[in-house]
Every structure is written in structure tokens, then in C-alpha cells.
Image (cartoon, rainbow, N blue to C red; front, side, top):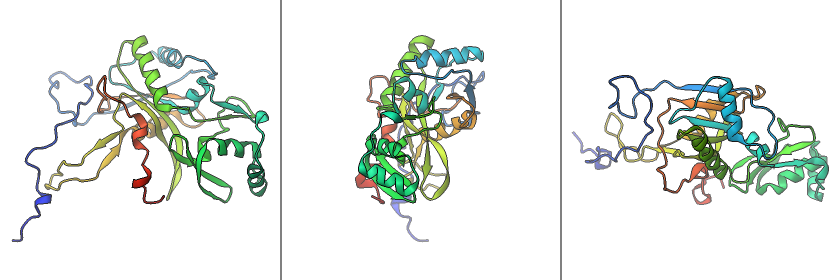
Amino acid sequence: MGKVDSALRPPTARPSAPAFTRLPQGKGDDEAPPDRFFGLQILPVRGIPEVTAGDDLCALVLAGLARGQVRLREGDVVVVTSKIVSKAEGRTVRLEDVEPSPFARAWAAAHGKDARQVEVVLRESRRIVRQDRGVLIAETHHGFVCANAGVDASNAGTRGQLLLLPEDPDASARGLRVSLRQAAGVDVAVVISDTFGRPWRTGQTNVAIGAAAIRALRTYAGTTDPAGYVLRATSIAVIDELAAAAELVMHKLARVPVAIIRGCPYERVPEGEPDAGAAALVRQAEFDLFR
């Protein structure tokens, strides 16, 4: 029998388990391990009106929950679409106020686009990653790589208006989380979601562009599988999974911009520690094989 590579043997001491949220559990389950199977609930928050600049998102969320006779619980994840965050923060542009550049005019003329909207996309871009067949894939100032730098005319509130991504989605998430904790008396995590396309796969999915009080990644490096193989690189983008799950009840046209995910064990960011938010998911240039 050949020798077993020592790198594949289980470590003598496993990494300490992360601090997961304490969830409501059945009688006698107080000592259940954090990786036990939990059923999830995804609750749509209905009845939130059209959001305008200066609106109090915390108050709107709690009012929507009250109408549905739902109360926030400790450990809930509140998923909010970027659109209502942008509207509340005044991140809108009227097309009539935009003067297109010569490049924007030329690109728009060649591909049947509105030059004013193209100009806004260019202004919101750190760089253009790809421009082909009328599609602009851009890197935003946040570091996100997405179509049109996240600039969107759909569900913008009124015709002739464009929505921009929140200026600092992680700061927006932290602010909403603090407001909810103060108003509702429970500690929750907040995820701000947006719809992104995916290279090499058809269709869009919701991803997290902002987060507060929740670790963005669940890292399995250094742990072992049942056969004793040491995992080296697996990191699950937990907040992206939660954003995608929430979209199942939000839909694109259902006017449900907020969802509550209940029953999901996740790793909290301890109070007082730096909270990297969704910025932790932005791949740095030196690690990007396609840049």
C-alpha cells in the first residue's frame, strides 16, 4: 500500500467553528450544532409604496411587516433591493438633464441607444470591460463588473428617469441595520441586492452589492470532507445566495422590494469588528484570471 500524502490527512486540530446566529429551536435542541439542517422561510414584505428621495426605509419596512402581521426576529436577514435604496438616497438622473459626449453619441447612433443613457453609464464607470453588439460591460466605481454599470431605467419610478447604484451600498446596509435594531429592538443582518448577468451562463440572478452584520463568505479552507480530504479553496458566497433566494418572492414586476429570510444560520460580524460587507466579494485585479 502506497504512502498517503500528508497534505490529504485530516489536521490534528480543526479550525474553531465560527459564531453562528442563535436561532429559535425546538425544546431540547438548545445544544444542536450550528450546521444542523434548518428549514428556511422567505417572507415577502408587501405594500411598500413608491419610494422617493428622503424616505425612511426603516419605517417603510416595519410598516409593511405590520400590515402582514409579521414581526422581525433576532437573526433575520432583511434583503432589500438596491432600487429602493437608490430612490431613498436620491441616486436618480433625469435624462433631460444629461448632455451626451461625442463618444456616447457615436455609440448610441451605431447601436440604436439613447445617447443620454449611454453618457450616464460612462460617468458611472471606472472602466469599460467590454463593448460589443450594443452591450456595455463596465466596472463601476465600487468594483462591480456588470452591464451598463448598474444604470437602469426599469422600475425607476417615472419615465425619463434613470436609477444609479447606491454610492456606498455597504454603508447603506449598515445604516438600515442600525435603524431597524433601534426601532424593532432585535438584531438582524441586512443585504442589499441587485440583478446581475453572469458570464458563460444565460439568465440573470440577484446578487449582494451591500451587506451588514453578516460574513459575506463561508470559508471551508482547512476543513476536511468525510473521506479525510483537506479542502483548500472552497468559499461559499453566502450573501449572494441569500440575495438570489429572496428574489424568488420579490420577482421583477411584483412590487416587492423587501424580503425577510428566516431560519438561516449565518456567521455574524461581531460588534466592534470591521465589517467588510459585500465589498469582500469584489475580486482584486491581481487574483482575476480574466483581467
